[in-house]
Length: 388
Image 1 (cartoon, rainbow, N blue to C red):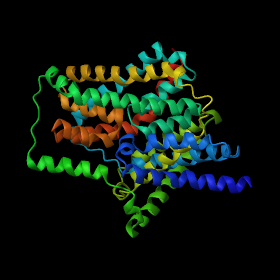
Image 2 (cartoon, helix red, strand yellow; image 1 turned 60 degrees about the vertical axis):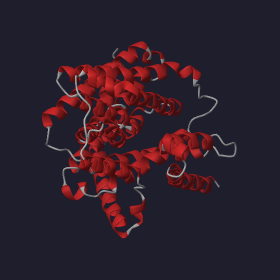
Image 3 (cartoon, one colour; image 1 turned 90 degrees about the horizontal axis):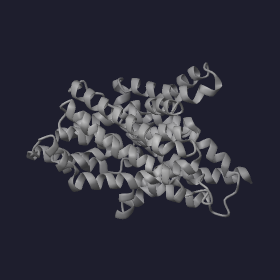
Image 4 (cartoon, rainbow, N blue to C red; image 1 turned 60 degrees about the horizontal axis):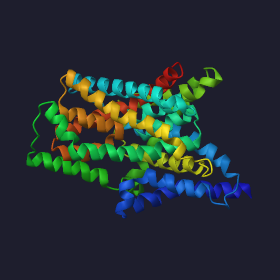
């Protein structure tokens, strides 16, 4: 009976994200929240239903250990690392990473040391705010923080990111341009068409093409390359002491995923990112289902919330200061901050708001580097914070 229940629960976890994606594209309110936040809510409700058997724990333990190793290389295969404007990108990435690292250290000293697993949470926040949800999920797999804390991290992130966007769109962009003595950019007709195309692409349903013959053929190749990367990373990680297996395994997956992105026949498999993102959606619901409402202390999480507020807004201030010193323009600073804090999918929207097509490329480039390096930075930061 337990086997039947577990099979049913696994099917529910795997298929629910498809329904949530469909709803998010048809219900404006859900669309603004985004699939991940909706899946966290659905997962928490599902996991706390009175008739769900205790055997669900075996599914909850198994799925994340399968999903994350597959999602990481899939989402990195399609990354494009351009050689153009290298000096500018180095300045932006250096400033962004140093700013997040410094802000996380300050936040930890003020608030993080007062919460359980604070150093590990600091590592997850570092990965999240230099890369994105992929990095946060990978670091959660490494650090094994309790599910309640991880759900709080993602819940608070939605609130803080919303406040961050309100600040930028209301007066932040104009304020930074004045501070940098930069005028507002003007767009040609071609620029507007390009930005509109990028925004339209970001709003399309990326999973419809998976149903085509070409999509299935590409998906088979993506899965083959992914399993090969996972096998190599796992084989090497088996050579290290047992306690280091997961750390080495995840970092090798990240490194090999980036390396594969330089191989054209792998990079051009354009279904890989979306397939990996779907695995993250399943992971999100699975992790949320592990949260026990009786243990989910939102009021008691004030230190964790404050920790994340400091990480976001202090890193923005430091990034602005460092970019000003290094003579990076205001729009590049803002768009790269958005790529780090909110991840690349938000870049086209902000680029359009700034009326600056060039910022589109800058932001996407910074975000891709964040995806690639975020896991490594998160592990290093957690180790550093344990020494403070």
